[in-house]
Image 1 (tube, helix red, strand yellow):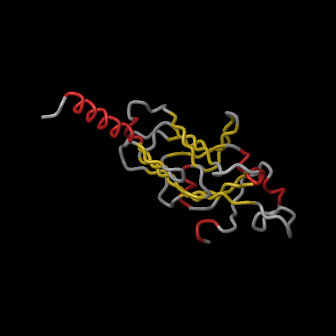
Image 2 (cartoon, one colour):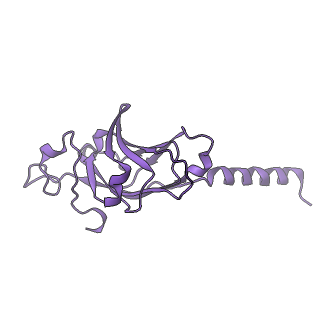
Image 3 (tube, rainbow, N blue to C red):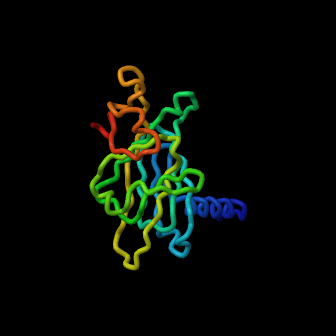
Length: 183
């Protein structure tokens, strides 16, 4: 027979496990489901990813996810980082924006993600704001991408990142990557 205290602790442990099972996150990758927010289609989830590479998988997207991509250590070189993202070819259900101080700039539309093109931007341009597109049907949707933080190379190109001139980094969204995703 369980003592009342042990029964209480087990029930609290079970409730905590259920509450945290809706999302799976480590410092590098995040997996979530909009099914847990069905009645809260305007919810915005904050995610902090602190690795040089990882992924995001959002099943049945609803509401929005703000993804803060930062290096694991602070250094002066962190200001010269760029973020490269590569959407999965079956990624759909959301638009991906850059969010800088509340101003959104479209990075990838839902239909553009199926091309799987690598898109890069300066880490100082802001966080990713991923907004679900409302759909009336219940077909399966997954917004999914890999990311990699890459450093500008100094030397031959005077700060060029993998052959891209430094001026291309200022305020432009560009599609390039030096060594991303096994290339």
